[in-house]
Amino acid sequence: MEDNFLKLTNIVYKALEFFPEADPLKNRAKDKALAIMESLVLIYETSGWASFQKEKIKVQISEDVDILLGYLWIGKSQGWLNSVNYLIVSTEYEKIKKEVAPILEPTINPSNPVLNNTEPKAPNFSISNKQNLPSVKLTVRQEQIVEFLEKNNKAQVMDLQTVLPNVTKRTIRRDLDELLKVGQIIRMGDFNQVFYKMAGRTM
Image (cartoon, rainbow, N blue to C red):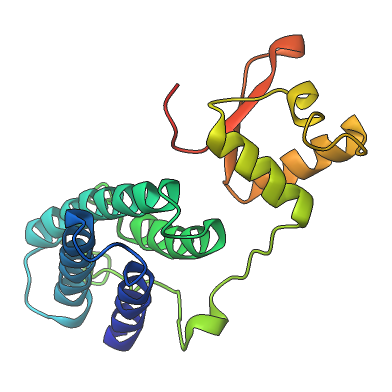
């Protein structure tokens, strides 16, 4: 299990090689990735920890993941990290976050010690190498849509037709639905006021 945490951390380090050497985000992101790995090893590879201590570490992991993904998002916005690599890394970290989410403590049953065993299960993700990460390949049209949304704060389907003049609204909507599914963008508004923007971007 420790190998999986190490491999994911190494992938982040490789992605951070594209950040400018002088940018403080580079070292901060490395520190966060390392802290997350160390915390994961503590709760899954170390025995003898009290339940409340593990829950505290889980909360810290969730906070650290949010901060790290924020750093990587900034790098993506600056063009240092491409959209696909960001999506791959963020998917793995969101998976970890979901696995370690603090849960409500079950009621202790003194007559059944088996039910009282609340040791956490290790996350069920497995990374043998970079190629085995979930692959999300965007089409040329989808890349154009993403590029347009990164330059502009938001867009409606009619706005996207300006950069995709030979593409029908139905096809553009289908591309938008695909980008929604993989978490690249979000949809806001109702009826004729529906517009799209990059996930994580504030108005």
